[in-house]
Every structure is written in C-alpha cells, then in structure tokens.
Image (cartoon, rainbow, N blue to C red):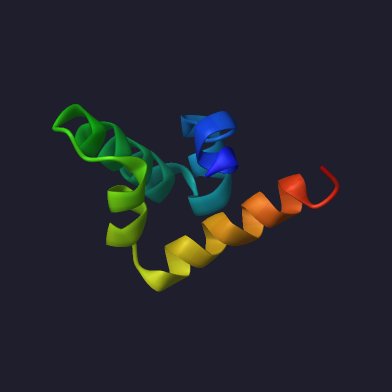
Length: 65
C-alpha cells in the first residue's frame, strides 16, 4: 500500500504496463476513486498478471527501505 500511496502515478503505470495499458489502468483507478471505490477494490479488480507486476515493482522499490 505504501507503493500505491507514495509512488503510483501515470508515469509509473506506463513504466510497468506500457503506454496504452498503463494509461488505461491508471485512469481506471482514478475513475473508481471518483465513484467511491478505494485502491484495494481497484487492485482486486486487476488480473493476476497485473497484480503481480505491481507487487514485484513495490518489492523492488522498497527492498532496501
């Protein structure tokens, strides 16, 4: 959750998923937040491959923190 709160951005999404899918995933998060859903709901709605990419990136960033 630290990663999602402190590092997640459009640029980060594009780095992980590429330009088109990254923008789509990022906009989906913003849309769900706008209608009252939280980050955990958004994360749970992603497929396993996308969730694993996020976990791997968070582990990479915070492994020496």
